[in-house]
Image (cartoon, rainbow, N blue to C red):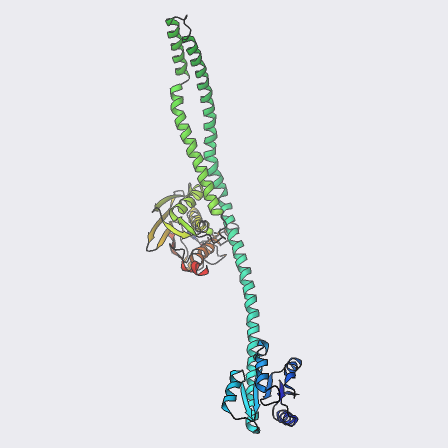
Length: 438
Ligand SMILES: Nc1ncnc2c1ncn2[C@@H]1O[C@H](COP(=O)(O)OP(=O)(O)OP(=O)(O)O)[C@@H](O)[C@H]1O
Ligand SMILES: [Mg+2]
């Protein structure tokens, strides 16, 4: 430790130096007889403790004390006032100006050593605290960097999981789109044929109108021509065509609507969900969209039993909640499929509101979950599926979205051999966790 003694009297300086060097271990003593040089000496010798005389000509010890304390970087140097005065007001001023202690002159050796040692301990504690603070700050910065890295990784995982889920159902979706597109295109062919027939008939009608406007034409010819037209209409099945056109157009328009809906659902599900975009959405609509996207997967696998109240408004990130539904529905479908039986299984989806929450329960009559797996299914990368068919992220992503991002609850009830139910409970206000984050 470096101790600076400041006194205008050389005798006092020497005495203090001797006393410190003899009685205090591990100290370097520096002397200063000119108060204006104190700051310079502090810098030069990296001073820990200052023993500061109060009464000095021109600049007093209190002035020196104030000038040291005026600089923040010297705030934790231990300053002991070294004085012959006993006036309590001066002591008060010293302490108010930032002194840590005082030592009376003439020196009492025991007191002198005890006070210097106390200051040394205080200084050591401050240095240790500073070091600890520096370490904590560095660790905190590292932690922040790691947290950011984790967030990035988590985001990438969520994106990958979403892509994987979409990839898995892509063939089904393609089929769902292909099917209406198939009959729309065949209907267009039909309409083209009908159009030609109607076009021909119009030409015949025009011909007839022209004939009728000819004043020289006799009535029998007109009746004959009209009978010919009626026969053509009958042969060409014009009445049927007119009837069928309405159906064909309605069917094509329904098909186009279905394609639009599928594409919309996909767009909602594919949304990144990173924008913290919390808006009021209808859970029943999100559920319907998720069901539409997995519709093809359920064909030949399970009957879907829907009991969905509508509307079910809540503040949420639509893309993310859609993904939760999709992940849980896909698990249910895969579970029923894994039974490998001919008869159709059953997947039920129930949604209703309850006390500032909306609840959605998705159940299946698949194989159920073994008891020892129940508390692991939400862990990232836990999967019982074959390599390549399951990554083990679906439920962990769902848990993150429901619990951490929306302040809700995601629970499971399962009986091995009987089936499984997942219950999603979401607060309608978007959840406290989310609000606190904002
Ligand atoms: N409805 C269910 N019936 C039976 N087991 C289920 C059901 N849902 C989930 N599980 C079990 O929980 C595990 C974890 O599910 P999770 O959705 O997280 O991953 P995964 O389906 O295996 O893979 P991924 O969803 O990433 O493709 C599954 O492997 C399965 O063992
Ligand atoms: Mg899954």
